[in-house]
Image (cartoon, rainbow, N blue to C red; front, side, top):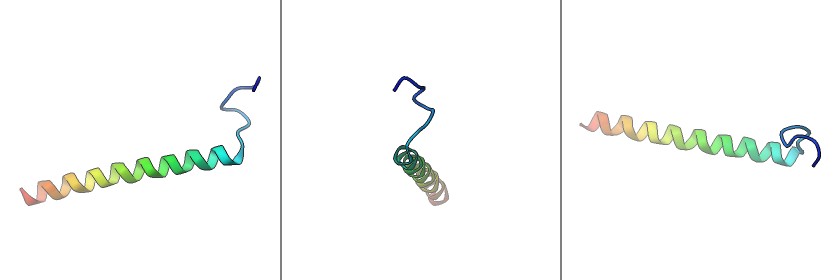
Amino acid sequence: MKKGILINWDNGSIIIVFVFALVIIGLVTAVVLMMNNDKKKK
């Protein structure tokens, strides 16, 4: 691990980062949709 952490990643860590990104995007979109639904109800 003498090289930078962000350099020379394994394929596994890249997949984990992509999964985390998808989960975060999903949560954000879900919150936005719920907020829009609440505004429409009011």
